[in-house]
Each structure stands twice: as structure tokens, then as C-alpha cells.
Image 1 (cartoon, helix red, strand yellow):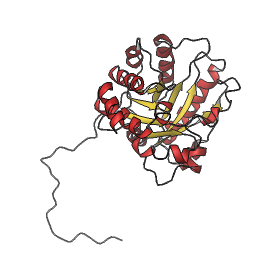
Image 2 (image 1 turned 180 degrees about the vertical axis):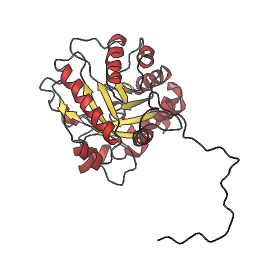
Image 3 (image 1 turned 90 degrees about the vertical axis):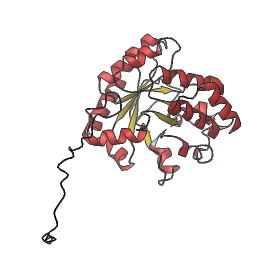
Length: 290
């Protein structure tokens, strides 16, 4: 039984200071989420900027050893400290990423077919209990709007959203372009909005040169721009800059970083663009001189 407080000192309840409240959470569309989910999101998106630079290295889950990912321990681990979050599979996380890493993880949670089969035929590929054991900050699930197995992939997402809400785990929907759909603003508006309407806490999608601001404006949750195929460094930095200026909350780049001639310099340049709104030409000069 604790001792009785017999100090006799006058306690200070600061009656002249109003009780502080936590206020509105800083991420778009996230104000009504539970504390644990907001806390996980705050590890992925920097509170100071509301933005993120994610490093995507999950390509092997359907492509095998992609160029630049042949040896994750050699090529990728030196980049991890420079990322706000690492997007990877549980196999790579357990086998290769040190448990002492302080970089938050967004875990690939769907899969099934390889590049040799119909890609939209994905299913949930991890149990929520394992994601919790791995202490990840979010789950990533592919959604193929317009794909042959569109409904199945949407249901994959909604099942993960339900589980995530139960345990405080955010879900990032990854829009994948169906074979019959053009990669334009009209398609992306529809795909992103469907994912948000059905519960995804944030969405990863492609950048388009015309109308991307309408994609971000019509999506009620944060949008993270996918890096896509390898581009020349200045082009990739320009794409990232435009996406940020047009409403994106960050980027999730893989090949444009780890296939660069100087990956560490490139991720540092991307971070300057995302978090400091550095102009692409200035970021490119930084890349060349780092």
C-alpha cells in the first residue's frame, strides 16, 4: 500500500492555466482516428512537415531480384537511415533489416501472382498478428481498379482496414492500373477515391502531368506519389516537386533511388524536395555534389 502523502506542502494545480488539449491531428482526413493509429502515422509522416519520403523495396514479392535489389544487405541497408519509412516485405524485414533500425516500416500485405500471371489475382499475404509482432507502422495492399480481379483486391483492402481499425494499424492502398484503364487523372481520381471511401488511411498512386491536383483534391486522405520506372535524376526530382506542389503528402520511391548512380545522394535530394520544397534544379545540383 502506498505511503500517505504527509509532506504538508501546498500542491500547485495551476488553476490559472487552461487544460491543454491535443488538438486536431495534422494529417488530412485523420482527425477521427484512434491515438495508436495516429501515432503510427506520425512515424511515417514527419509531424514537422506532414510529409514523407518512403523507400520502396518490395518489388521482389512479384518480380524476384529486381535490378538494384539483388543484395538488399549491400545495396539498400545504407539507404534506410535516410528514409522516413521503409516499404518492404516481411521476408526481407526478418532476414535482412536489423531489428535495431529506427526507420518505420510500411509492410507489404498482399501478394500471390508473379509477373508471369495475372497480377490482379492477389490475396492478403500476412496475418495482422504477424504485422503487430513486427511492430510495423502501416500495411500496404494493392488495389486493381479496372483489373480482372478488381472486387477481390478491394475486399483484400477492406478486410485489412477492418483488422487495422481493431488494432490501430493504418492501411495504405496502392492503386494499380488495370489493363483496360488509361493512367490519367480521371482514372486515378476514381481509384484513389474508391480506396479512401472504403477506409484506407492513405493512398499511394502515380503522378500524371495533367490534372494531378484534382486527384489529390478529390481524395480525403493523404496521397503518396509512386516513383514508378527509373527516370533521369533531374526528371525524377522534377516529378516529385510537381507532385508535392500539387497536393501530395510525400513520395514512395524505389527504382529512382536504388537504381541511381549515387543512391544516397539521390534520396537526400528527394528529401530536400519533399520536406523543404527545394527546386528540382537546386536538388539536382545537390545530388551531383554530394
